Image (cartoon, rainbow, N blue to C red; front, top):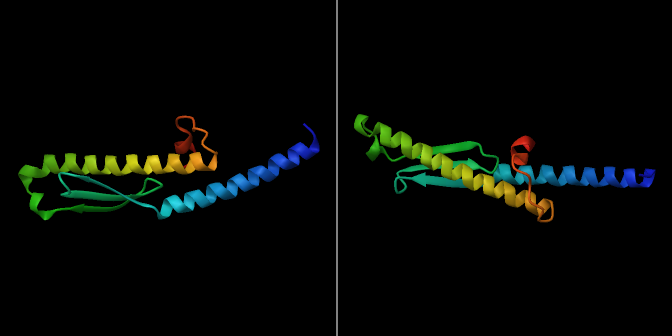
Length: 110
């Protein structure tokens, strides 16, 4: 590898880092919703898989309904996070020109 190749690689890496930072900023601003129980439990996450909001319909809150409510919250959060992971994969695939990411790479990139 010559000096010119090394300089080109470093230049490309800098561009890739800048694009990655832009994508991460876009994902942080993205709002993704999940719901369970016919909309009685709703959650909002961002594209970086951070929980932003949780809304529970007051009609379903009672001691007897607590196990059901807990299951619905888990379901809504899981749905929203799955959608956020899909958005991350789509954004990264665009950055990499459609090349699929190895499993676990998104988690390593944070």
